[in-house]
Image 1 (spheres, rainbow, N blue to C red):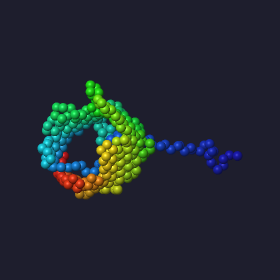
Image 2 (image 1 turned 90 degrees about the vertical axis):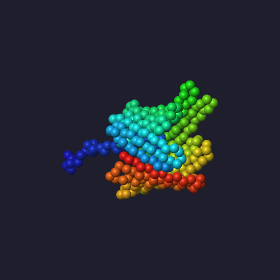
Image 3 (image 1 turned 180 degrees about the vertical axis):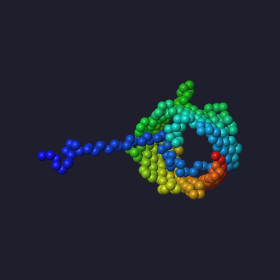
Image 4 (image 1 turned 135 degrees about the vertical axis):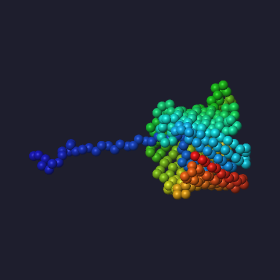
Length: 308
């Protein structure tokens, strides 16, 4: 007897394809684990600063900075940056060359290269007038769900001294990242290593990060309440210095007034705040900051104007 109801046989029913899980994201760099929390806190300001930014082309820009302070002599800095054509994201372009020179001739320079699709290299140089202070070389490999980095600091084959830093981060889930840092230093008569374990958990509106090792601990918590309010909490403990610091910071954005307000309070009885105000349609940003340390009875304030 035929299939009078018009039903398809069991073997002919369409099979539901198995659900494909999204691949785990890359965890990023080890140095950026606490970045969201640190961006909430205000930067220290002292004296008067004038910054003039000038974009010369789509690849090259310069900045002139004049700083006057009661704590030292007036200073001038020339900052130049070159960005190449290879753009991986909105903030990553290769090759990139960045240099900053002050009025005394001291130079800070960085060179970023993309050797392959997943392999990056960075070189950092720092001089004090005609003397080299720091030279550092980094190599970073970014896999689909992990990042491995190796850094050589001040390598000296003749003096048999070097600082080596190895980082590794692995995404276990879409929210959880685990990894570690190994710092090895060697110089005549001294040799040692420090191991630090790290973990980061990212939720929809908050991020918690923890670094624990023989040198101490560093914990941070970032929370985004809404588009205008962000808060951050930091805890740092150094076993060598026997010092512990607890800090609370907040970030308030007032888009209608073109203003950004940052503030902090820490366990060293220090309070501080920075107010930034943009002046459209002019390309000018004004910033006013003040910091007071009640324990040491120290107060300093700053004012800056940024053009461009």
